[in-house]
Image 1 (tube, one colour):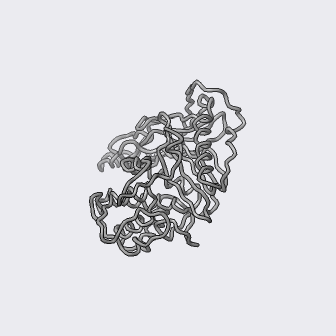
Image 2: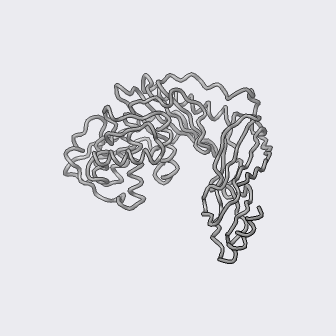
Image 3: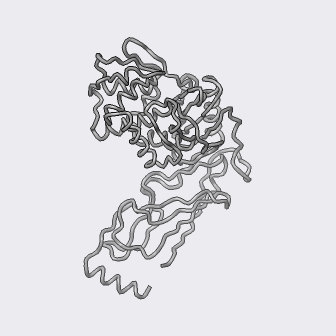
Length: 377
């Protein structure tokens, strides 16, 4: 098997002040137990501290409850206008509530708004029971989904975030979850930007202060218990760029909002996002054996974006690596190569390159011809 290596140099010039070549910009000090800043488009962590340390998620748990609720809506096992019975367990929930009542009809849509904007524990339990029959079974669903998403250091015991020894996560895992929620359910994400919601003649404000501090902020979720401290996952979109901040264990409501704003501002000011290849743009064409076509186009199924310190974009180099021979059938989206990216001759990362078209298997004659040709390769 031979390796085919193609070196491409990209000169992508941006008008930006120079950054010292020896490393990434120094992030600000953040007054929190753990924190992380993520660029949504490139999925790069720009700065972090104690991002893999286990913490109690408090009401940030409701992000997974929301994710599974949105998934149920997409799968049509739930409907927004569907009435949901309120069990005694849901009605008697402690902590923050939206004040649902056993004998008063409530819809899935109302429960989702109450969970997201009012952080209602009662809404979470009602949704969990509507989706899976019980909160215990729903917690098992939460854990399976966490594993599927790659949240390797997360365990859920309930849908609300109430304290439990088996209920924990990390800043890194929370960033994975929030990015997945924004990516997979863009039709529901705008609910997180609503500043207040009224149910049962009670209007409650969104606890996310960023929505009042920053006009570009549109989410995401707050959390607080005595053990967890004051937590906030924020997100803001400026132009085409979206950043996600995770601040855990701050000293107060005010501090968590201030530190989140500080992180977001740092990310927007110190970094640029560069589109290296657009969606379905050909990176290279590879020889295919025993297929209906002799070549397949390699590229990315979404825009391939990297995030760099300002002034570094013209120092990008990419190296495309594929393994030959490549045999048909080649499925659309199958990994057929790797793009190795360096900046100023320092490694940034290796990224999978996919087939952006399918190549079916050839007929008997075509396969026989290529079999003979391969003998001489």
